[in-house]
Length: 142
Image 1 (cartoon, rainbow, N blue to C red):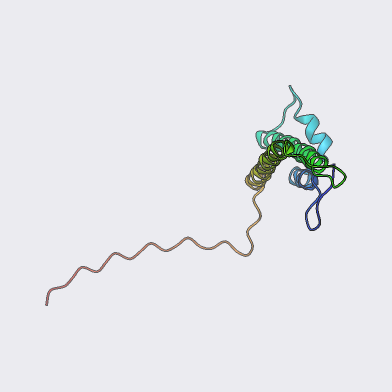
Image 2: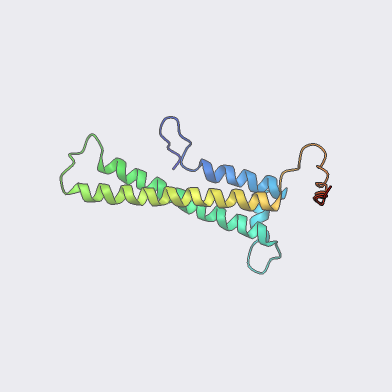
């Protein structure tokens, strides 16, 4: 599900962006990267970490979509909301919050992994190392 409210990204936009970032970081199509991470295949740990985080982010986005759909059903204008629905609405909103937190954590983890794997090039010349401090002048007695 890709529904988003006005002014927000579609629910699965984070996963789509991460997929593009992973492809850019490793210079290969996502399907190829995924195939090299299959059991028994040789791949590097950073690539495997990025793909694992991606899978977690996708699961979180699926959970977000499901909870949003359930909230829409529970609060539909065509439906009479009963007092007994309050606990269901609250539980659904809490699960939605948990999935949102999980998605954000996966997105932050992915950014850290991709940054560690391929740090951005520094701009301009490297700064020279700092000069060693001069020893303090010994106090002289007149």
